[in-house]
Image 1 (cartoon, rainbow over the protein chains, first blue to last red):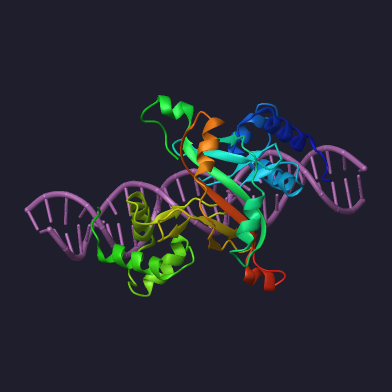
Image 2: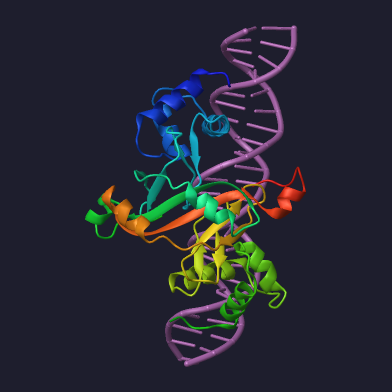
Length: 132
Length: 132
DNA sequence: CTGCATGCAAACCGTTTGCATCCCC
DNA sequence: GGGGATGCAAACGGTTTGCATGCAG
């Protein structure tokens, strides 16, 4: 396991604090309140490193930015197609999907992810809201 | 429906020609063989426009680049985690997923997509291949 | 003739990287 | 003292956009 520097610890703490799935720069803003001199590069480097070490999840979702998740158990997500926000979807993970997919491909399958798209509660309220 | 300019027509033809799911710049290279003076901006603009009009699919998959698909029927995909290549997965689309997800979220759900990840046949052959 | 579409280049945005300094073992 | 980690800023890759010109209706 990797060394737990102050920066890594605080990044991890801030990520664990929220149920949303922040982007790197959202996280950067959160962390900067406690470590004002931290660099954006450090945030990116450490998120990448922690994802490689299975400490966090890097979400490979649609949209322009990567998002991060302190919950490493396999689960599904929903992304707001207006504002880009991502939330968890609490339905059981269907492992059998991988088995049936394996029959139809010559890829060596490693995993799967289900991503729902929709309009989040906030964007439903405001009729002409932000984009992504 | 939008006007079918020469550029749009050729972009659409080239996209339909392949079973892969090319990125904008891959498509740019393909189209340039027939329209050497076309600009990359035109390709992007028209792909976006045709996706909005339901003529093609913009794939919101993981990885760094967007990919496009001339097949507009709902289907699932697999992405090679080494080279980024994307292929179709021919298993039935599970519409009931949306219904069960609806119970666990206050989003207004619009759709869903299943993305498998794995190693494509080419990357399986070469043991230390390219990344993505 | 008028307006949308194009080619071109510059701008943009998210992410990565090189480098000098710093800090911990 | 040495090696990894950091802050900073520049570079990068993919995408978007402004603008002058071109072309079809």
